Length: 111
Image 1: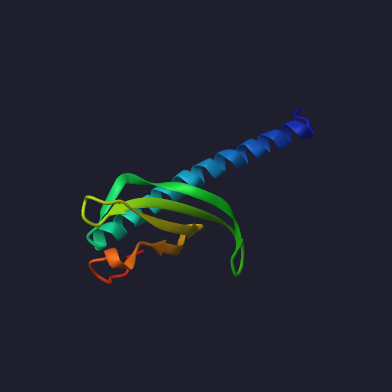
Image 2: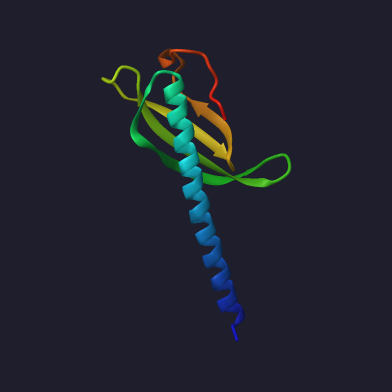
């Protein structure tokens, strides 16, 4: 029979594993969005990945959700590096930024 402290430890481990899995999925989603944004605006997505900058909780209209901030780098002419930013609340885009001067078009990213 498990003691209450053992049950608590198991529960916390399950929550930790779930957080790790959702963080990895969010990073893959952010990576795909940043890559697509760069492609749509004729930019080169550098290093092939995004990096998580922060994670926290935020309140939406109905729920408390996880807010994740990512950064990525891109190039407009293959000789420079610029920084872009992406913020997801759950799987939804809150902010997606690249310098407007580097865009070749004003198309919005397809979600």
